[in-house]
Amino acid sequence: MRIGLAGTGRIGAFHASTLAALEDVEQIVLTDVLPEGAARLAEANGYELSPDLDDLLTRVDALVITTSTSGHAPALRAALTAKVPVFCEKPVASTLSETIELVRLVEEAEVPVQVGFQRRFDAGYRRAREAVVSGELGFLHTVRANTHDQSPPPAAYIPTSGGLFRDCSIHDFDVLRFVTGREVASVYAVGANKGASFFADAGDVDTAAAVLTLDDGTLVTVSATRYNGGGHDVRMEVMGSEGTIGVGYDDSLAVRSAEAGVDYPCGPRKWSFMERFLPAYRTELAAFCDVVAGRTDSPCTVADSLQAFRVAEACELSRATGRAVEMNEIGDAT
Ligand SMILES: NC(=O)c1ccc[n+]([C@@H]2O[C@H](COP(=O)([O-])OP(=O)(O)OC[C@H]3O[C@@H](n4cnc5c(N)ncnc54)[C@H](O)[C@@H]3O)[C@@H](O)[C@H]2O)c1
Image (cartoon, rainbow, N blue to C red; front, side, top):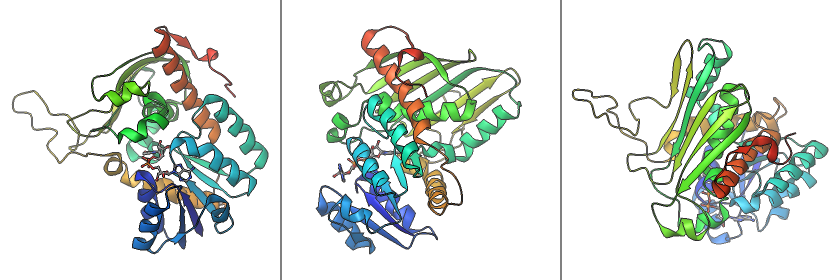
């Protein structure tokens, strides 16, 4: 199959090379509003180049959207009109109202769309989900989740990112639903600016924490930062009456023990989301090829993405107002 890819920045270039290695993929066709980077990437790897999205959509069997977040919704709408299946990076839109509209448009268009929450394809998160579903952990009472980037993205990324909860913690919110099978009922969130001033200039924070209550009463803490000198640190602990399981606990853990004589963890640390989730990104894009070929339904829908976005929206509202927010205050829950 021929795969179009719109947006050839950090994750776009990375997804292009992952896609090119998949058996189903014959050719990659690139486009970007800044054509120089796309042209360099195409030339270096033998990909085709297209001048714009309209042209690209006539030349491909499927579209991968890896533009800046503000470009996702327009590209997704164009692909739905052209009846081209889509893989769209998270979040599918910058605002709640656009996300709700896209859920409706996708349903009407009957075009398969998969959203890029790669943690659903990570072996550790999948094992945690199995442990919950099988009852092995007993009843859940507490979940701890964190996404700690080693260092910030470029300053220019922040103003169109949607902010720390919509850009970063949204992965924790999605995989929390995936692992526990529950919905969030309420949130209380705070944020801090401890690093570069470009976060505050964009109305954003570089560090945040949230307490979530799930609809079965399980308590969840979510932590995020753009500054984690110890390495890229993404983990989840799921605690139940019969056991506790931890995702992301191996020797690459970006934490060093303060205890004398303890040499765990002792392996090389991971420094970026690309290193941390390389196998998950591969599995995710292979699953997208299955979706495009009609072998399976989308494993992560725009409706799923809406639920994660609503939690991010609630956290932003809580941070802005300094109060707890009930999820029924936030837009459309369908
Ligand atoms: N799933 C993940 O783990 C993950 C990781 C990183 C980024 N992302 C998401 O991927 C998206 C891109 O992130 P990035 O870090 O690669 O950003 P980036 O700024 O490095 O790259 C974005 C690229 O999109 C291009 N672009 C912007 N608007 C466009 C448009 N309308 N049409 C075509 N090209 C356009 C830019 O010129 C740039 O080359 C973001 O939405 C981000 O949230 C997801």
